[in-house]
Length: 91
Image 1 (cartoon, rainbow, N blue to C red):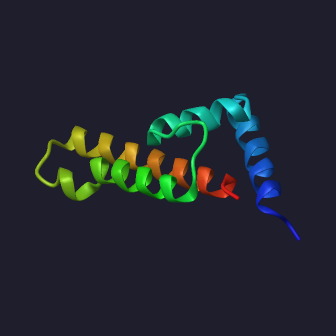
Image 2: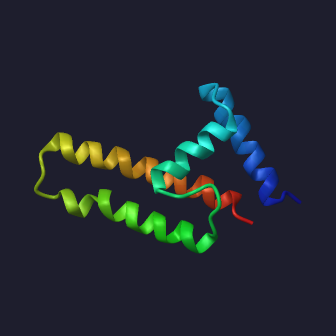
């Protein structure tokens, strides 16, 4: 049976093949995106995700220009990816 650690390692290897980044670099980027420090709990992760997702949620950009909406959508995808990645690493 695969553990959370195994899944995180697998994800790190996949990302490394695609972007040639070290796993630690990706971890730092995702933590920075959500405004987290190097030590975080599952609860802090959830709060940081909700706060960051609220800033880029599509409903906030209903009347905005097309470029702004697209930029917010792209940022929201990154926020979701960061959350999923970091959530898998929380034990």
